[in-house]
Image 1 (cartoon, rainbow, N blue to C red):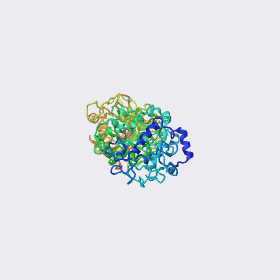
Image 2: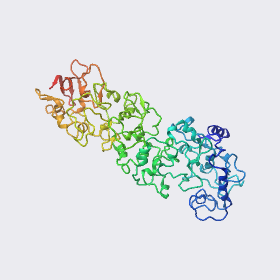
Image 3: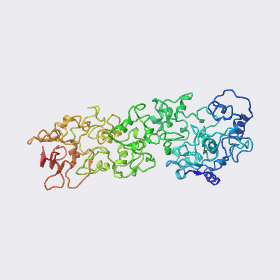
Image 4: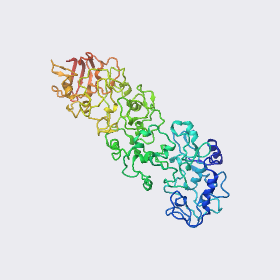
Length: 629
């Protein structure tokens, strides 16, 4: 339900915007009267540039340019808004009876990020009401105070780009104090109020005419300044990181004008590139589909796809998200993401904005675990899995918003995660540096003896920062299978960059274990350098498990190794080298409650197992203190 505009509410709004309906701090009344001199001109006018109201759509007289609303008989131009006599009270010689608007129910703009009491704006007042007297479509264009009977033009604006309507929730807010919101969030707004825009009263009230000059259409849409390259928005708004972001600086060309922006092609300097559109590549000041953030489209991801589909940006992220078997399902959720939400209390959703800040994202690189430019200024959760942080400084902190202690664990349809001896889906627990072993995501790993680890540059696909003392990103494993960076979509479960087979009986090959072989040298692994073979039994070692020449039942890496980390669990054996058995395959030996691995010590590359391996054909293999080597 919208808000009725009553005299009492006018007074309430005036308390927030003192005297703004009576005081034009920067527009002397003499200037208004000078403008009214046009009324005295009765002769036909020659063709004029759009700096003159006579050649714009705000000329409603019979001399109006083609295609405009117009009177068939009225020759005066200013009379549709102004009158030199008997003007509406408390207004600058306005010729509109604004009491006709008092019964209108305006739906106000509301947003959790609005720095205003109640997170919503008051009903429109002052100059904005004059604009709405035509643009909300409720009053005839010819309904004026003087002459008393009105003017001959009787049509209303009920469609087209000039029709705002009474639903203001989709439009940039008006009728509030700029000075007030600056006081609430000084880091987000330009101070003092920018001189190229029109603010009302000593409290700098914002109205429609703050951005629009109804007398001058030089810049299109009656804008006071050229809006190309975010120039209009940047008059007031400060967005940290915007000056480095490709969204505000890229010269990449758009294949066609964005919907609703076709008018920019008629300007003297048409808009063609990403930086031309700037803010308006994603936002709309009017008719926004995503009302709360004034986004062009209501579905958040649809604002990203026009560029991130391979036609402007180089990678087709849209297809990764839409067509891959395993993905972050951004299309499943609508309107759930909120910039003010706590990262430890997400409502079970994922959107592009959960990982990317479109105002701050840039192309700078980093070394793990630090966030790269693409992840700048995003919220996260610290390594304890419980403490919110902004901005996230490390990539894993962004992942922990959904994959750590406080988050509901949601798995793709059809994907069954591996259950292990020490089983948890809390990644903050698995990556803890107090664990016996863990992937070096938060810090360097504890095992300094990894003979299979590749050297950077040994393979084009090997991470360039790989080393025993180094760290890696979550996205080194969880990323698009098409080559783009980041966990958008993949056909390899669970959203992996490369194939990672987990089924017993899978034949070893470079392709089947491509994910592991990104970092671990295949020849070294199959030569049993890091896991020695029992030469007496001619069994064990990596080759004995992966190739299984004796039993003919190849065992994948995942059966023995946990790819994240292993929290401590008493009585479950040693968990060095990420040993954490898949309990669907490996069970306890006689007299034990858990399958056990015993490490012979750092650098020995050897150990023993007491466990039973169960195979799908019903057979099993018992290991009783089986030693390797």
